[in-house]
Image 1 (cartoon, rainbow over the protein chains, first blue to last red):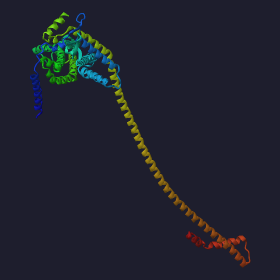
Image 2 (image 1 turned 60 degrees about the vertical axis):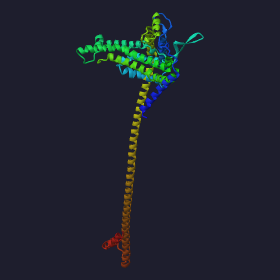
Image 3 (image 1 turned 180 degrees about the vertical axis):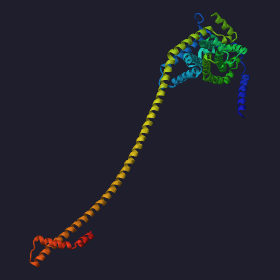
Image 4 (image 1 turned 180 degrees about the horizontal axis):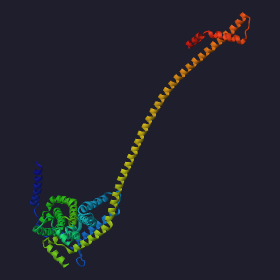
Length: 296
Length: 189
Protein backbone atom coordinates (compact mmCIF):
# COMPACT_ATOMS: atom_id res chain seq x y z
CA UNK A 1 0.00 0.00 0.00
CA UNK A 2 1.31 3.40 -0.87
CA UNK A 3 1.39 6.19 1.63
CA UNK A 4 -1.50 7.92 -0.12
CA UNK A 5 -3.60 4.77 -0.09
CA UNK A 6 -2.92 4.32 3.60
CA UNK A 7 -4.05 7.84 4.35
CA UNK A 8 -7.26 7.52 2.34
CA UNK A 9 -7.99 4.15 3.91
CA UNK A 10 -7.55 5.73 7.32
CA UNK A 11 -9.85 8.64 6.48
CA UNK A 12 -12.41 6.29 4.95
CA UNK A 13 -12.33 4.00 7.98
CA UNK A 14 -12.73 6.99 10.28
CA UNK A 15 -15.79 8.31 8.41
CA UNK A 16 -17.15 4.79 8.03
CA UNK A 17 -16.96 4.12 11.75
CA UNK A 18 -18.61 7.50 12.35
CA UNK A 19 -21.48 6.68 9.99
CA UNK A 20 -21.82 3.19 11.43
CA UNK A 21 -21.96 4.57 14.97
CA UNK A 22 -24.64 7.02 13.84
CA UNK A 23 -26.70 4.23 12.28
CA UNK A 24 -26.29 1.80 15.16
CA UNK A 25 -26.82 4.16 18.05
CA UNK A 26 -29.17 6.48 16.24
CA UNK A 27 -29.82 10.09 17.04
CA UNK A 28 -31.48 10.95 20.28
CA UNK A 29 -32.89 13.89 18.45
CA UNK A 30 -31.11 17.02 17.35
CA UNK A 31 -30.61 19.55 20.08
CA UNK A 32 -32.02 22.75 18.66
CA UNK A 33 -31.55 24.71 21.88
CA UNK A 34 -27.81 24.21 22.06
CA UNK A 35 -26.16 27.29 20.63
CA UNK A 36 -22.40 26.79 21.07
CA UNK A 37 -21.58 30.29 19.84
CA UNK A 38 -23.50 31.73 22.75
CA UNK A 39 -20.67 30.65 25.01
CA UNK A 40 -18.81 33.54 23.44
CA UNK A 41 -21.51 36.08 24.12
CA UNK A 42 -20.57 38.92 26.42
CA UNK A 43 -23.06 38.42 29.18
CA UNK A 44 -23.03 41.21 31.72
CA UNK A 45 -21.63 39.90 34.99
CA UNK A 46 -21.42 43.13 36.95
CA UNK A 47 -23.61 46.04 35.96
CA UNK A 48 -21.63 49.28 36.12
CA UNK A 49 -22.61 52.76 35.01
CA UNK A 50 -22.10 53.67 31.37
CA UNK A 51 -20.55 51.15 29.03
CA UNK A 52 -18.18 49.88 31.71
CA UNK A 53 -20.16 46.73 32.57
CA UNK A 54 -17.94 43.86 33.61
CA UNK A 55 -18.37 41.07 31.11
CA UNK A 56 -16.50 37.82 30.52
CA UNK A 57 -14.36 39.57 27.94
CA UNK A 58 -13.49 42.40 30.32
CA UNK A 59 -12.44 39.90 32.98
CA UNK A 60 -10.24 38.08 30.47
CA UNK A 61 -8.67 41.35 29.31
CA UNK A 62 -7.93 42.40 32.88
CA UNK A 63 -6.57 38.97 33.80
CA UNK A 64 -4.40 38.95 30.68
CA UNK A 65 -3.02 42.38 31.51
CA UNK A 66 -2.42 41.38 35.12
CA UNK A 67 -0.56 38.22 34.10
CA UNK A 68 1.43 40.02 31.38
CA UNK A 69 2.48 42.87 33.65
CA UNK A 70 2.96 40.68 36.71
CA UNK A 71 5.06 38.09 34.90
CA UNK A 72 7.20 40.60 33.07
CA UNK A 73 7.86 42.75 36.14
CA UNK A 74 8.51 39.65 38.24
CA UNK A 75 11.08 38.44 35.74
CA UNK A 76 12.51 41.92 35.17
CA UNK A 77 13.18 42.43 38.88
CA UNK A 78 15.01 39.15 39.18
CA UNK A 79 17.28 39.43 36.18
CA UNK A 80 20.36 37.36 36.85
CA UNK A 81 23.63 37.36 34.99
CA UNK A 82 23.31 33.62 34.80
CA UNK A 83 19.70 33.16 33.70
CA UNK A 84 17.43 30.26 34.57
CA UNK A 85 15.06 28.75 32.02
CA UNK A 86 12.16 31.16 32.50
CA UNK A 87 14.47 34.15 32.30
CA UNK A 88 16.10 32.73 29.20
CA UNK A 89 12.68 32.31 27.60
CA UNK A 90 11.64 35.87 28.43
CA UNK A 91 15.00 37.19 27.27
CA UNK A 92 14.68 35.32 24.01
CA UNK A 93 11.18 36.72 23.49
CA UNK A 94 12.39 40.22 24.42
CA UNK A 95 15.35 40.10 22.03
CA UNK A 96 13.13 38.66 19.31
CA UNK A 97 10.61 41.48 19.80
CA UNK A 98 13.33 44.11 19.90
CA UNK A 99 15.49 42.91 17.02
CA UNK A 100 13.45 40.77 14.66
CA UNK A 101 10.09 42.49 15.00
CA UNK A 102 10.84 46.12 15.85
CA UNK A 103 14.32 47.03 14.67
CA UNK A 104 14.10 45.06 11.47
CA UNK A 105 11.11 47.06 10.31
CA UNK A 106 11.77 50.56 11.61
CA UNK A 107 14.67 52.93 11.82
CA UNK A 108 16.47 53.21 15.16
CA UNK A 109 14.63 56.19 16.63
CA UNK A 110 11.20 54.83 15.64
CA UNK A 111 12.14 51.43 17.03
CA UNK A 112 13.19 52.94 20.34
CA UNK A 113 9.96 54.93 20.50
CA UNK A 114 7.51 52.22 19.53
CA UNK A 115 9.19 49.12 20.94
CA UNK A 116 7.21 49.26 24.21
CA UNK A 117 3.96 49.48 22.27
CA UNK A 118 4.80 46.64 19.89
CA UNK A 119 6.18 44.51 22.71
CA UNK A 120 3.10 45.11 24.85
CA UNK A 121 0.91 44.24 21.86
CA UNK A 122 2.68 40.94 21.37
CA UNK A 123 2.83 40.02 25.04
CA UNK A 124 -0.79 40.99 25.73
CA UNK A 125 -2.12 39.10 22.69
CA UNK A 126 0.11 36.13 23.46
CA UNK A 127 -0.97 35.90 27.10
CA UNK A 128 -4.60 36.45 26.09
CA UNK A 129 -4.40 33.65 23.56
CA UNK A 130 -2.60 31.31 25.94
CA UNK A 131 -4.92 31.77 28.93
CA UNK A 132 -7.73 31.39 26.43
CA UNK A 133 -6.94 27.69 26.25
CA UNK A 134 -7.16 27.11 29.98
CA UNK A 135 -10.62 25.75 30.81
CA UNK A 136 -12.24 28.10 33.31
CA UNK A 137 -15.60 28.09 35.06
CA UNK A 138 -16.86 31.07 33.09
CA UNK A 139 -19.64 29.51 31.05
CA UNK A 140 -22.74 31.27 32.33
CA UNK A 141 -24.59 30.41 29.15
CA UNK A 142 -24.92 26.76 30.11
CA UNK A 143 -24.83 26.78 33.91
CA UNK A 144 -25.13 23.73 36.07
CA UNK A 145 -27.70 24.03 38.81
CA UNK A 146 -26.80 22.66 42.22
CA UNK A 147 -29.01 23.22 45.27
CA UNK A 148 -30.92 25.81 43.33
CA UNK A 149 -27.77 27.83 42.56
CA UNK A 150 -26.53 28.28 39.01
CA UNK A 151 -22.83 27.43 38.82
CA UNK A 152 -20.98 28.37 35.65
CA UNK A 153 -19.58 25.42 33.75
CA UNK A 154 -16.07 25.15 32.38
CA UNK A 155 -15.23 26.47 28.97
CA UNK A 156 -12.32 27.83 27.05
CA UNK A 157 -12.76 31.48 26.29
CA UNK A 158 -10.37 34.16 25.10
CA UNK A 159 -10.58 37.92 25.03
CA UNK A 160 -9.08 37.77 21.56
CA UNK A 161 -11.94 35.50 20.45
CA UNK A 162 -14.09 38.61 20.59
CA UNK A 163 -13.81 41.11 17.75
CA UNK A 164 -13.79 44.12 20.09
CA UNK A 165 -10.35 43.43 21.57
CA UNK A 166 -8.36 42.90 18.35
CA UNK A 167 -10.29 45.76 16.75
CA UNK A 168 -9.21 48.17 19.46
CA UNK A 169 -5.63 47.00 19.18
CA UNK A 170 -5.74 47.35 15.39
CA UNK A 171 -7.21 50.82 15.76
CA UNK A 172 -4.34 51.82 18.05
CA UNK A 173 -1.88 50.53 15.48
CA UNK A 174 -3.71 52.34 12.66
CA UNK A 175 -3.82 55.64 14.53
CA UNK A 176 -0.24 55.24 15.67
CA UNK A 177 1.31 54.67 12.29
CA UNK A 178 -0.89 57.25 10.57
CA UNK A 179 0.18 59.90 13.07
CA UNK A 180 3.83 58.88 12.63
CA UNK A 181 3.50 58.94 8.85
CA UNK A 182 1.92 62.40 8.84
CA UNK A 183 4.51 63.65 11.29
CA UNK A 184 7.30 62.36 9.05
CA UNK A 185 5.95 63.50 5.69
CA UNK A 186 3.21 66.02 6.40
CA UNK A 187 -0.48 65.29 5.64
CA UNK A 188 -0.10 65.81 1.89
CA UNK A 189 3.17 63.99 1.70
CA UNK A 190 1.77 61.04 3.62
CA UNK A 191 -1.18 60.68 1.27
CA UNK A 192 1.08 61.17 -1.74
CA UNK A 193 3.41 58.48 -0.44
CA UNK A 194 0.56 55.98 -0.57
CA UNK A 195 1.08 55.86 -4.34
CA UNK A 196 4.14 53.79 -5.15
CA UNK A 197 7.02 55.67 -6.74
CA UNK A 198 7.01 55.53 -10.53
CA UNK A 199 3.22 55.47 -10.94
CA UNK A 200 2.08 58.60 -12.79
CA UNK A 201 -0.88 59.98 -14.71
CA UNK A 202 -4.47 58.79 -14.29
CA UNK A 203 -3.19 55.44 -13.02
CA UNK A 204 -1.82 57.22 -9.96
CA UNK A 205 -5.32 58.35 -8.97
CA UNK A 206 -6.70 54.85 -9.25
CA UNK A 207 -3.79 53.38 -7.31
CA UNK A 208 -4.21 56.07 -4.67
CA UNK A 209 -7.84 55.13 -4.05
CA UNK A 210 -6.87 51.46 -3.98
CA UNK A 211 -4.01 52.04 -1.55
CA UNK A 212 -6.16 54.24 0.66
CA UNK A 213 -8.77 51.50 0.87
CA UNK A 214 -6.22 48.79 1.52
CA UNK A 215 -4.77 51.01 4.22
CA UNK A 216 -8.09 51.41 5.96
CA UNK A 217 -8.90 47.76 5.42
CA UNK A 218 -5.82 46.92 7.46
CA UNK A 219 -8.01 47.73 10.46
CA UNK A 220 -10.32 44.89 9.47
CA UNK A 221 -7.68 42.45 8.24
CA UNK A 222 -5.51 42.89 11.31
CA UNK A 223 -8.33 42.48 13.79
CA UNK A 224 -10.37 39.82 12.00
CA UNK A 225 -7.30 37.66 11.34
CA UNK A 226 -6.63 37.40 15.05
CA UNK A 227 -10.22 37.23 16.23
CA UNK A 228 -11.34 34.70 13.60
CA UNK A 229 -8.36 32.44 14.14
CA UNK A 230 -8.85 32.29 17.88
CA UNK A 231 -12.64 32.03 17.74
CA UNK A 232 -12.46 29.31 15.09
CA UNK A 233 -9.89 27.43 17.13
CA UNK A 234 -12.07 27.59 20.23
CA UNK A 235 -15.22 26.62 18.37
CA UNK A 236 -13.65 23.67 16.59
CA UNK A 237 -12.20 22.41 19.88
CA UNK A 238 -15.64 22.88 21.41
CA UNK A 239 -17.33 20.97 18.58
CA UNK A 240 -14.82 18.17 18.57
CA UNK A 241 -14.84 17.86 22.35
CA UNK A 242 -18.55 17.13 22.32
CA UNK A 243 -20.39 19.94 20.61
CA UNK A 244 -21.08 17.85 17.50
CA UNK A 245 -22.27 14.94 19.58
CA UNK A 246 -24.73 17.20 21.40
CA UNK A 247 -25.92 18.95 18.23
CA UNK A 248 -26.49 15.70 16.36
CA UNK A 249 -27.74 13.92 19.44
CA UNK A 250 -25.29 11.07 18.78
CA UNK A 251 -23.30 10.73 21.99
CA UNK A 252 -21.15 7.88 20.67
CA UNK A 253 -19.68 10.08 17.95
CA UNK A 254 -17.74 11.93 20.65
CA UNK A 255 -15.43 8.91 20.88
CA UNK A 256 -14.29 9.72 17.39
CA UNK A 257 -14.12 13.49 17.71
CA UNK A 258 -12.47 13.72 21.12
CA UNK A 259 -9.00 12.65 19.89
CA UNK A 260 -9.28 15.33 17.22
CA UNK A 261 -10.12 17.85 19.93
CA UNK A 262 -6.95 16.92 21.78
CA UNK A 263 -4.85 17.23 18.62
CA UNK A 264 -6.43 20.57 17.74
CA UNK A 265 -5.96 21.80 21.29
CA UNK A 266 -2.25 21.03 21.14
CA UNK A 267 -2.04 22.60 17.68
CA UNK A 268 -3.77 25.76 18.86
CA UNK A 269 -1.77 26.19 22.04
CA UNK A 270 1.50 25.13 20.50
CA UNK A 271 1.33 27.12 17.31
CA UNK A 272 -1.68 29.33 16.67
CA UNK A 273 -1.64 31.23 19.96
CA UNK A 274 1.97 32.33 19.46
CA UNK A 275 1.78 32.63 15.69
CA UNK A 276 -1.18 35.00 15.75
CA UNK A 277 0.43 37.19 18.39
CA UNK A 278 3.59 37.24 16.29
CA UNK A 279 1.72 38.07 13.07
CA UNK A 280 -0.18 40.90 14.74
CA UNK A 281 2.98 42.39 16.22
CA UNK A 282 5.12 42.08 13.10
CA UNK A 283 2.39 43.48 10.82
CA UNK A 284 1.96 46.41 13.20
CA UNK A 285 5.71 46.92 13.08
CA UNK A 286 5.79 46.74 9.29
CA UNK A 287 2.93 49.26 9.07
CA UNK A 288 4.82 51.66 11.34
CA UNK A 289 7.99 51.24 9.32
CA UNK A 290 6.18 51.66 6.02
CA UNK A 291 4.37 54.78 7.17
CA UNK A 292 7.58 56.72 7.74
CA UNK A 293 9.70 55.10 5.03
CA UNK A 294 10.62 57.59 2.30
CA UNK A 295 10.14 55.25 -0.63
CA UNK A 296 6.92 53.36 -0.46
CA UNK B 1 -27.98 47.80 29.31
CA UNK B 2 -31.08 47.55 27.23
CA UNK B 3 -28.92 47.37 24.11
CA UNK B 4 -26.96 44.49 25.46
CA UNK B 5 -30.12 42.63 26.32
CA UNK B 6 -31.51 43.26 22.86
CA UNK B 7 -28.32 41.96 21.28
CA UNK B 8 -28.34 39.00 23.63
CA UNK B 9 -31.91 38.22 22.71
CA UNK B 10 -31.08 38.40 19.05
CA UNK B 11 -28.15 36.10 19.61
CA UNK B 12 -30.27 33.64 21.48
CA UNK B 13 -32.68 33.61 18.57
CA UNK B 14 -30.15 31.61 16.67
CA UNK B 15 -27.82 34.10 15.02
CA UNK B 16 -24.18 34.58 15.80
CA UNK B 17 -24.13 38.24 14.78
CA UNK B 18 -23.01 39.33 18.24
CA UNK B 19 -19.74 37.58 17.50
CA UNK B 20 -18.75 40.21 14.94
CA UNK B 21 -20.46 43.12 16.63
CA UNK B 22 -17.95 45.29 18.47
CA UNK B 23 -18.84 45.82 22.10
CA UNK B 24 -18.14 49.39 23.18
CA UNK B 25 -17.66 48.48 26.83
CA UNK B 26 -15.13 45.79 26.09
CA UNK B 27 -13.34 48.12 23.67
CA UNK B 28 -13.05 50.83 26.29
CA UNK B 29 -11.85 48.34 28.89
CA UNK B 30 -9.31 47.02 26.43
CA UNK B 31 -7.97 50.50 25.68
CA UNK B 32 -7.62 51.28 29.38
CA UNK B 33 -6.15 47.90 30.28
CA UNK B 34 -3.75 47.96 27.37
CA UNK B 35 -2.62 51.49 28.15
CA UNK B 36 -1.97 50.52 31.77
CA UNK B 37 -0.12 47.41 30.66
CA UNK B 38 2.03 49.33 28.20
CA UNK B 39 2.78 52.00 30.80
CA UNK B 40 3.71 49.51 33.52
CA UNK B 41 5.79 47.37 31.20
CA UNK B 42 7.62 50.38 29.79
CA UNK B 43 8.23 51.71 33.28
CA UNK B 44 9.07 48.60 35.27
CA UNK B 45 9.66 45.62 33.03
CA UNK B 46 11.48 46.58 29.84
CA UNK B 47 14.24 48.80 31.29
CA UNK B 48 15.57 46.18 33.75
CA UNK B 49 15.46 43.49 31.06
CA UNK B 50 17.23 45.76 28.58
CA UNK B 51 19.77 46.73 31.24
CA UNK B 52 20.42 43.11 32.14
CA UNK B 53 20.82 42.16 28.50
CA UNK B 54 23.15 45.11 27.88
CA UNK B 55 25.10 44.22 30.99
CA UNK B 56 25.47 40.64 29.86
CA UNK B 57 26.44 41.76 26.38
CA UNK B 58 29.05 44.09 27.83
CA UNK B 59 30.28 41.28 30.02
CA UNK B 60 30.56 38.97 27.05
CA UNK B 61 32.30 41.63 24.99
CA UNK B 62 34.66 42.34 27.85
CA UNK B 63 35.41 38.67 28.34
CA UNK B 64 36.08 38.27 24.65
CA UNK B 65 38.27 41.34 24.65
CA UNK B 66 40.10 40.28 27.78
CA UNK B 67 40.53 36.81 26.33
CA UNK B 68 41.95 38.34 23.18
CA UNK B 69 44.19 40.56 25.27
CA UNK B 70 45.39 37.64 27.35
CA UNK B 71 45.96 35.70 24.18
CA UNK B 72 47.95 38.54 22.68
CA UNK B 73 49.94 38.85 25.85
CA UNK B 74 50.57 35.14 25.92
CA UNK B 75 51.65 35.27 22.30
CA UNK B 76 53.94 38.13 23.09
CA UNK B 77 55.43 36.34 26.08
CA UNK B 78 55.81 33.19 24.03
CA UNK B 79 57.52 35.08 21.22
CA UNK B 80 59.81 36.75 23.71
CA UNK B 81 60.53 33.45 25.39
CA UNK B 82 61.29 31.86 22.04
CA UNK B 83 63.51 34.77 21.13
CA UNK B 84 65.34 34.45 24.41
CA UNK B 85 65.62 30.75 24.00
CA UNK B 86 67.09 31.21 20.54
CA UNK B 87 69.47 33.84 21.88
CA UNK B 88 70.45 31.57 24.74
CA UNK B 89 71.03 28.72 22.34
CA UNK B 90 73.10 30.98 20.13
CA UNK B 91 75.03 32.14 23.14
CA UNK B 92 75.59 28.62 24.31
CA UNK B 93 76.82 27.64 20.90
CA UNK B 94 79.09 30.65 20.83
CA UNK B 95 80.43 29.75 24.25
CA UNK B 96 81.04 26.19 23.22
CA UNK B 97 82.71 27.33 20.01
CA UNK B 98 84.84 29.77 21.90
CA UNK B 99 85.76 27.14 24.48
CA UNK B 100 86.65 24.72 21.75
CA UNK B 101 88.72 27.35 20.04
CA UNK B 102 90.35 28.32 23.31
CA UNK B 103 91.12 24.69 24.02
CA UNK B 104 92.62 24.27 20.60
CA UNK B 105 94.64 27.43 20.96
CA UNK B 106 95.84 26.38 24.39
CA UNK B 107 96.76 23.01 23.07
CA UNK B 108 98.67 24.51 20.20
CA UNK B 109 100.29 27.02 22.48
CA UNK B 110 101.25 24.32 24.93
CA UNK B 111 102.70 22.24 22.14
CA UNK B 112 104.55 25.26 20.76
CA UNK B 113 105.77 26.20 24.21
CA UNK B 114 106.95 22.70 24.88
CA UNK B 115 108.75 22.66 21.58
CA UNK B 116 110.28 26.00 22.26
CA UNK B 117 111.27 24.95 25.73
CA UNK B 118 112.86 21.84 24.43
CA UNK B 119 114.75 23.80 21.85
CA UNK B 120 115.82 26.30 24.46
CA UNK B 121 117.02 23.52 26.69
CA UNK B 122 118.86 22.00 23.79
CA UNK B 123 120.43 25.35 22.97
CA UNK B 124 121.37 25.84 26.57
CA UNK B 125 122.92 22.42 26.75
CA UNK B 126 124.86 23.11 23.58
CA UNK B 127 126.07 26.40 25.01
CA UNK B 128 127.00 24.75 28.30
CA UNK B 129 128.96 22.06 26.53
CA UNK B 130 130.69 24.63 24.37
CA UNK B 131 131.58 26.68 27.46
CA UNK B 132 132.78 23.59 29.29
CA UNK B 133 134.86 22.63 26.31
CA UNK B 134 136.41 26.06 26.12
CA UNK B 135 137.14 26.01 29.80
CA UNK B 136 138.65 22.55 29.54
CA UNK B 137 140.84 23.67 26.66
CA UNK B 138 141.88 26.72 28.67
CA UNK B 139 142.69 24.50 31.61
CA UNK B 140 144.69 22.20 29.38
CA UNK B 141 146.43 25.15 27.93
CA UNK B 142 147.29 26.52 31.37
CA UNK B 143 148.40 23.11 32.50
CA UNK B 144 150.52 22.71 29.40
CA UNK B 145 152.03 26.16 29.99
CA UNK B 146 152.82 25.41 33.62
CA UNK B 147 154.27 21.99 32.76
CA UNK B 148 156.29 23.50 29.96
CA UNK B 149 157.66 26.17 32.30
CA UNK B 150 158.44 23.55 34.86
CA UNK B 151 160.07 21.33 32.30
CA UNK B 152 162.05 24.14 30.82
CA UNK B 153 163.16 25.16 34.28
CA UNK B 154 164.28 21.68 35.04
CA UNK B 155 166.16 21.43 31.76
CA UNK B 156 167.78 24.85 31.66
CA UNK B 157 168.16 25.38 35.35
CA UNK B 158 167.59 28.82 34.54
CA UNK B 159 164.72 30.74 35.57
CA UNK B 160 163.55 33.30 33.32
CA UNK B 161 161.42 36.04 34.68
CA UNK B 162 158.08 34.69 35.42
CA UNK B 163 156.52 37.07 32.99
CA UNK B 164 158.96 36.45 30.20
CA UNK B 165 158.59 32.77 30.50
CA UNK B 166 154.90 32.91 30.47
CA UNK B 167 154.93 35.17 27.45
CA UNK B 168 157.16 32.76 25.63
CA UNK B 169 154.91 29.79 26.46
CA UNK B 170 151.90 31.69 25.44
CA UNK B 171 153.48 32.46 22.15
CA UNK B 172 154.42 28.89 21.66
CA UNK B 173 151.03 27.70 22.60
CA UNK B 174 149.41 30.14 20.30
CA UNK B 175 151.22 28.42 17.50
CA UNK B 176 149.78 25.15 18.61
CA UNK B 177 146.48 24.25 17.12
CA UNK B 178 143.88 23.51 19.71
CA UNK B 179 141.15 23.88 17.30
CA UNK B 180 141.17 20.16 16.79
CA UNK B 181 140.11 19.78 20.42
CA UNK B 182 137.56 22.49 20.19
CA UNK B 183 136.34 21.14 16.91
CA UNK B 184 136.18 17.72 18.40
CA UNK B 185 134.24 19.06 21.32
CA UNK B 186 131.93 20.96 18.92
CA UNK B 187 131.22 17.89 16.77
CA UNK B 188 130.34 15.87 19.86
CA UNK B 189 127.57 18.19 20.58
